[in-house]
Length: 85
Image (cartoon, rainbow, N blue to C red):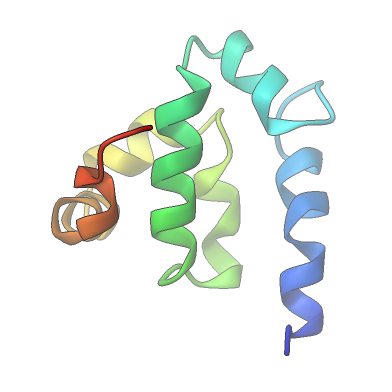
């Protein structure tokens, strides 16, 4: 069962992705490759607090993944090593 907070996530990300209404479009604006962004985003969402969700928007992404706790969480996540295909 999903909590009511999880249903708000797309709205929160869209509202905080600059002038765009979807995170993929915001990736282009911030020169972020959307495929690794989405992979890492889904890796982090499992452990990230709802209060800090704005840090995962493309406009804040580079600073967020360069620091803890995001850097450590991504380094330890086994899903990042799964080959595509």
